[in-house]
Picture 1: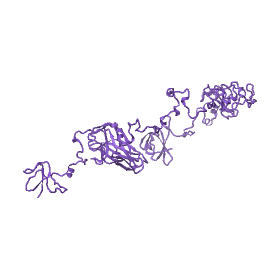
Picture 2: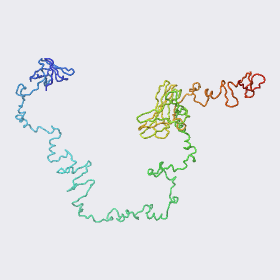
Picture 3: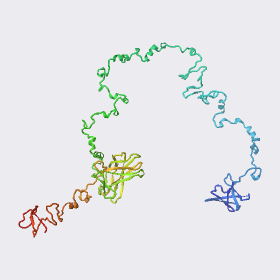
Length: 606
């Protein structure tokens, strides 16, 4: 089939795609001239491929611009040059007739003449079976078909019936045991057979002749036989029946160690109720004569196990009973308000710091206080109302007071979140509370440290202990600790999750391994200017409660009234009348004759 060709020059053309492997040097090419049915011929000198097309050159300048297709010749055996696609007939243009050295084309086409003669006269004896795809000789194959014995050529572990059904009918297993499946007779031995070790018979044995001279077939097997007719026992059938019919027997004894049921009944007929073990002879001392290690049947529930003891049946379990006076009752523990629990879980962090969650605002906006002292405020419930799609939701943020923990290193240890919490509904859980810890630098940068998490499993206030082991933490001396609490629910909507702070009974807190540095210089204490002790008088509260020296004294009784400065410790006596011995004090009297000591004079205005 021609390939579409494009004229480039009298000795070159192009074809689509990479065709360099087809258009090789010396290969013949035939070109179709469009619309004429005539051809041009040329010899290829080479080809090269550029993207999209292959350019081919010829040794001859024979091409016309009207070429439309190209065909290439068959590559010769030498790989150089080619032959045109052709047939062989008597016509010279088709290549001429092909002749054979010995046979004519007609003899080959019809298998006749001298070719047929050579085939017919070829000696069959010149071929052997060994020249085929088997190493079996012709003689061996002949022995398989001449009704002779061929024991060494193959083995048969199975034999079929003469008509092929059943197949298999007789066979042996790997141990040489012979099986016959021919029903209904099975293995039918007509003359004589030697049986080896045993003969296993599944069904009946049919004997046509005699067995050792006895006509078994004519023998009456219905005839009764007595047991005594056997030579290996003298017991009668009745005696044997007595041994198996459940009745008493005198046929044998058991070394005088056993009695018949009748004898036992006769011996113990007068007993009723319980038997005194002490009256039985040949008894054992159960504490010394029995080796408990030698006892068997422990698995038969013949001994008490821990699981079989009813703890509620044990007496004197009350803590006040003898032997329990050094334990505290649950009622007594209930009055500790969780302090005992804290002592237990905080043992590892002995001499460390417990931080309480306070509702008081810190000096940082958006943060409440994380203080090492309990709050004296009433209990409150910090919570958030969330839906499952809200994800992890912030409840509150807490920070230590400025200057705390005042250390450059927090030792490794266990952080215990003593958490009082609940959730409004448990469905579509699980629901969680988390506390995330940070180290906050003085410039406000916060560095994440670790997270504590607790699944909330109750709709009523429940106490949890969340223990988290943490490696040592390096800090700057001015760093503060921050913890932020979050809630997250597994599903549902409108869930309220929260925890309790402050108060005396359900105050959530953190037991930590933090060791704060002691401040020995009073001037280094922070918060000295805080007015957080209102039970004491500062300048403002003192001025509001007490009269100052520069103020008037206003009396609310009818004893003395006046305006201006009406009491002084140093009177200058002038023209005003004075009243002596009205108010007494400890100071000296004013200078001047006639005034007694320890008298305070009241001077009235005109």
